[in-house]
Length: 292
Image (cartoon, rainbow, N blue to C red; front, side, top):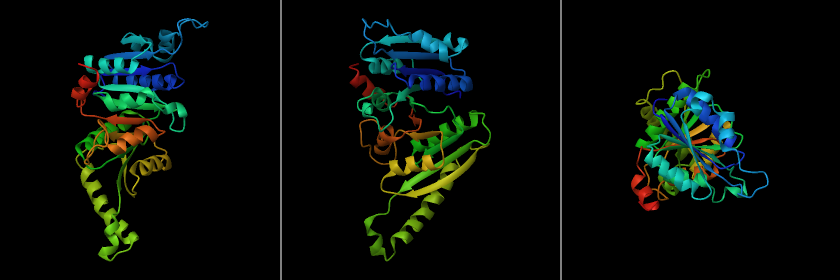
């Protein structure tokens, strides 16, 4: 886990904070980071009869004494997401961990994890409340782009470093059959089978350039015109611990900073989601957004 030496952690006095800290502790065990920078958004009013929230005490309950020596913390009443983004830029962070509200919750609208996922200049790990700290069964949706290859390498790193028996990697690609298949004189089933064979071969060639030693790897092709739904359903069927996806793909992006499928996964996935970026690729836009 050498690539995650500088961690950022975004907390907001929400129940999922304990899960974010559990993942932080686990990643620290695997990678021994040099530093951990915590940005805490405080919800408690200054005149709350319960007194101030014990931010440092919360960290000490979940992180080891050795790791606490490498922790710095900022507490913000407003603009906490921007503070985290500035810290990611200033401290050259490698990974930001943040909690996320489950998709069915009305509270998910406007939550900070959306902005962090889109704008952070480094990898982002989104952790839903109640997520188990397991990293040995990882799903990697790919579209054969460079970012997909980066995600596959990161997924292999996580699964292999987990130390758990029989780590499993699932590599999935999703394709859709165009409306013109009938003009080619074939049925929908025949069109799906033909495209599936093509994509299966592409998957086999794609994974050859990545070190998957020590891992069990399953390749899967899904025919669907709703790729994010196909990804989530496959992850649930295989009981994946983590979805690892590249931030951009082969097709034009549907939002400012993330590819369309990834953008929708951020909103809909109920599993931990690692968004892999090329380090610093969003810095120009981040500077513009933060008024640099």
